[in-house]
Image (cartoon, rainbow over the protein chains, first blue to last red):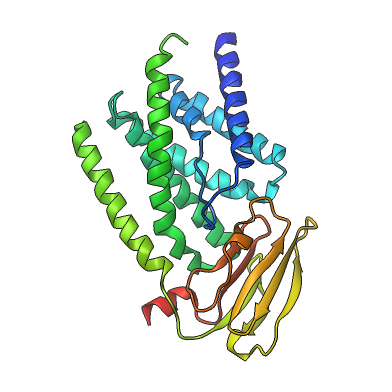
Length: 162
Length: 124
C-alpha cells in the first residue's frame, strides 16, 4: 500500500513538473488549445502499469495542482473536461491494444482530450462557432498523441521493474 | 485485436482527412464584416468593420484583473495586447472576414462573426 502511494506521488510530481515546464514554452501556432501535452506520457504510462484507479488519481491531482501552480484557475475547466474525456477513451482503448500499440491508445486519448476541451470552451464562451477549430485540434491531437504515446511505450518497455 | 499495420492505416487516413478539413476550415470567408466582442458568453460590443473610419483601441477587463486591448482598423480587428499567459489571442493577428474567431480562453474573450453564428455563415 505504501509502495503504491509513493509510486503514485512520484508520478504525480513528475507529471506536474513536465506540465509546468511545458507551459513556459511558447506554442508556435496561434490556435487556442494546441499544445504537445507531454504530461500525457505519465497518464498513458500509469494507465498501463498501475491501472485505472491510480491513473485517475494521478490525472486529477496533476490537473488541479497544475492550474494552481501555473496561476490559471480559469483554464482548469478546459483541462478537466479534456482530461476526463481522454481518460474515459483510454479506459476503453487499453483493453483493445497490445503492448506494442500503446501509442494508438495515446493518439485516441489526445484526440478525445481536444474534443472535450473545445466542447467545454464552446459551452463557457457560448460560441458554437468555436467548432471550426475542431479539425485542426484533432489533427494536432493525432500528432501530439503519437509523440507522447511512443514516449510512453518506450518508457513502459524500459522500466518494467518499477 | 487489430494488427499494428491496420492501426497505422486507420490513423494515417484520419490524419489526411483532418488535414484536408483543417485547410478548408481555416480559410473560410464570409460576406459580412460585422463582428461581436463576447466576454464570458455576453456580447459587450458589436462592430461593423467596414464602417470603421479611423483606428481606435479599447480595453476589455477580466474579473481577475487581466486585460485584453482590442484594436480596430477599417476592415479589420485584432487583440493588440494582452496579459494572459499564452498570448494565443495576440499571436492570432488580424481578423477581417475569416470565419475562425479570435479566442482568449484564459480571459474568456471571443471576437466572432456577429448575428448569425459562424456555423450559419458556413452553411449559406
